[in-house]
Image (cartoon, rainbow over all chains, first blue to last red; front, side, top):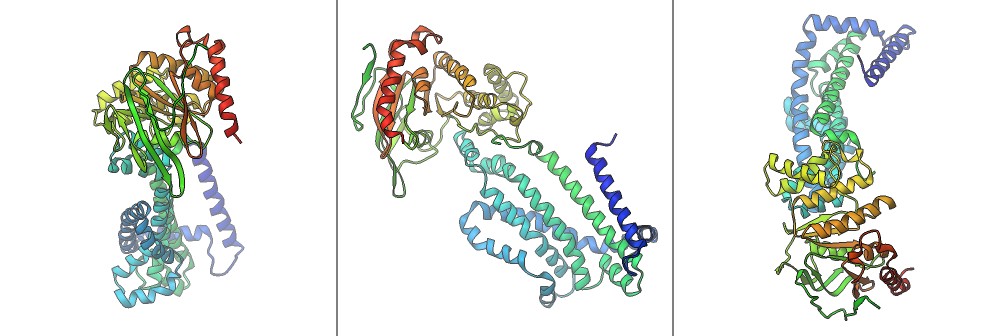
Length: 253
Length: 268
């Protein structure tokens, strides 16, 4: 039996697909295909192996970039959050990174790192990392003082205070940052493929647009959104397993 | 009057009968320009409950945190069992005003936290924690999360955590101020039994005059700006008359009145 929450999720997906189908049939624009046409193109591309080949290409910078952003971002965020000097040193960099118009800066990256994997990974990182770092550092800095005092008075070492109190207390906000960062990373991966060299999913989008095969173009866009949604749901499951009490609100409320 | 009041000058150290579990010696604490505590000295007799009572801003919580080793004094020192306090130690356990329970941990894990930090093995610390959860009347709630409990039950968890590490001294920072009146009365009665049955020294911060007189063997009245000990009161006669009779004992009522008349000028 499906839970109410899952039922609502399915319902909202159905509404969205229905609206897409309607908008395609009106049509809103000649360049906007119906949902069913797009799905047909989607399954065709899965069938003929094009999708798989494209994702082999796209997932490489995406996965590498997200891994680097998550590990380095949380690490740096903890460091920045726990130490005022590093806060002063690093926070401005990430604020600038977050606000920078990345598309305009890509030519600079290409100039410095070429058109290969490095540039694409960098684009993913620049999109994903700032929000992860800033959320982590903010959450760590806002650990309730009485939790830390409790830890110290019960003889927790500095490491124990960090691992048993500061990180669990910060985890809801850290995970919120991860969710935002990873979604931005997906955008970054496609942006890199559109702006640097057309490979993978970006190639499908560019190529199908150039030959006016709009169903394929939208199928490619749909596939990346689907993947992002599935991944974010997985992340939510991981959070629930790791930090069970987070779902249950805070005591001081 | 039957009550024995010991008035003392703030700088004078008075050793009262039995030996002291905790001695505060000439503690001064400044926050920048602000003088929170000035040259404060105080003795806490072993096995008894001493209240720190005073209007808000008199530095009673600051003093408690210095005794706990959570804050460093600007000058002066604290001795616990003859040893100078350098930081938190296994001889002291703290009960927090806002409970300070970890919301992601079950009651069992919250109570066992102190034991875990002391390196007690899992099965052993869970057995000890379960015993103290039972002692504070929370059997059956071991696997509940703090937010599922009422305010009073949460503070019982905080108390069980402090008791489970079996420290000599229990430091309580307004532990009952966040619970409702009826629960608080029950807590005060339980606390009297605790003082009698456990061989521990209690340091109890409160802003309630009635509460201080009800539970204390010794009451230190703190006055603000700068904070100092103005008076030490040792109620003598009503302690053994049973919990039900304390509140109508004439000495109890006299002490409550006396304290109020000396504090009222400091309350805006």
